[in-house]
Length: 505
Image (cartoon, rainbow, N blue to C red; front, side, top):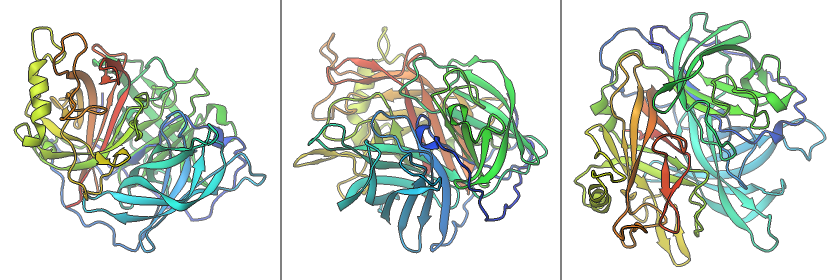
């Protein structure tokens, strides 16, 4: 694995775009796009903490490359997203197969407003449907949310209308990760990054869950020297591959394999942002390829810190983001696959965490599903759920209260050779995790007592514009497997991802 010693610079590319005939680009709906802000990395071995910085001024317009996580019935094509803070408008553009001219078409248009919690509340005036038709929404769709580090990237659960069953329309979250897409990398000396693969609902095996990469460029060629791992940690086969970066109608993107822009069946598009986020969109149609990062799926990453992070400062901060479980299809009145969440507002002794804590203790030891309890390197939190007259909704506005406390992220010990990497993290799920609650806790079908589970994970932590970002992955193929409760009360193995941006101060 790699240590961070080099600086990363970028060239500014002219604003002209090259219109390319990517005839089937909209069909590549299988992977998550990741934002990789490549922060300037200094050398040194001292402990690092996030430094306060001034965010770009309001009134700016920010462009990001982004695309779908893989969730049945609610995928969005890889796309270019514009957040216009002067007009509070969002536009998501992509290629669609109903066009004759190969130019991006707006597939989502809407407005956004800042909530007290730090989330952006998005109303979609136009939205995509499962039939591929882009339809006006009157009244606008509400319930989409995003978190943004302005100018660097964003995480969002945009909405897609499922019209597959006649007369039974439903709205699903279509998660996306976005990264700045304004310039190709210009880095002759390799620069280190950390990444996690994004859970893919269509993949039944894992070839990699996380890893470290050295990225360099020479002209338009971008080389990725990667060391992937399975959760364990289990070292996988290292690789060195080269892609090519070009200005496209979706921004400055690196395509792998080299010169593969016109062959979408084996195309991976990678956005490397100037502030430290990395996003990769990978085609699941090419099941024989492992992609540039060895996982055969999209990745989300961040520039590796130049020295060990102060873990107490990391877990002492507050975060907004999303809990992603693409197979979590418990029948509910809300989409449980993508849940806007927050962490760091609670600790183990907070009253809101009492149900979580008691269920963890009840299942701890003696062969229980929680072999050890959370360490001091832990973040407590969970999703925002509000009960309404028609059911529950995932509402992180703060108008109906704070987030639940039903999940613990225990980072564990930082890797001694790779600052910012936590290969032995653990996720704890309490008896009040959806579809259950403190009033209606998850009861184990075999014991009749409150259930709770824990499972191994890997997490990476970096800084982007002075704010910590945390990306975590857990696998259904690890031992023990990642599990969430189903509506019958049994643990259901499934992939899990958690993506967090530190709240702005």
